[in-house]
Length: 337
Image 1 (tube, one colour):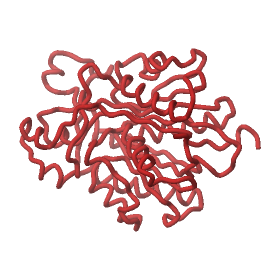
Image 2: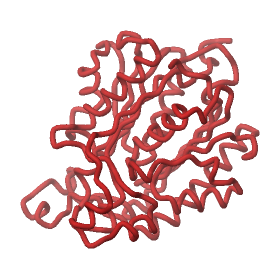
Image 3: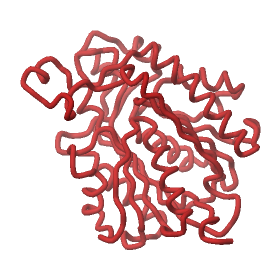
Image 4: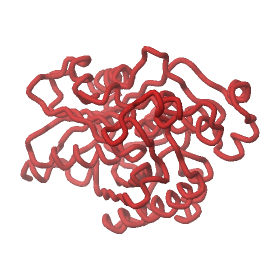
């Protein structure tokens, strides 16, 4: 088997969530909402909120340290770093470069960010896998890290109740063992619907000004009804397409790990796939929507609780701003503990 044909698998996974928990009861004192209203519409009970001095690179570094420790590796063993985030520490340099320094990674490796919002981790996973299959890289860190509390309008009850902060990291590694790890993946996007979930100002098209700040143009804005409709359709279609690509049926998949956005989206996707919710692990009730961090957070929890076992087929799927989406099918190759 040539290096280009090597399998790429998740050797280890680590996560980090901020200490502070913001409950629905606390939110109801900040904005016109209630625990029942939030739970009914999203399934969320609480979310984690980063401290003022706790940035995505800090959370990502902690998650990566856990993953490296579980893998029995050091920073010197990593050949590639990709960070998925829609809330970078700063516009530039990349959060990946900041993480490279914090983790003490080698200076002769590529480090870069991917901006695909809630689909970012799936995008980064495919990019890393393809780069590793080229034979140039043996081990990679793929990190999803978000501080969404910094971009939500805490006076808008339709959005502020949904999001939380956190990070997740995986160590990817190549192996000559066939048919393990990443088996198939696909990505997609539709920029024609970019306005359904976006931020108006803050980029070069609309730099920050006193007026844009006072008008709240730097906060996340979302058309929830339309996002819901598109999310259910493309997530279900993405699952079906990647399963067909790998000649696998939904009955053969042990676990579906979806982006943790909204319990009603998860239920609708499961229904369209004719899969019971018992195969859709979720933790959004305790973390909310953590964007690019949500899949590794859910994946790590399912693995740590003993649900995901060696040899299981696992399908991860996400949808996010862009609009973007993606799905990856993998055969779990037991990572180091």
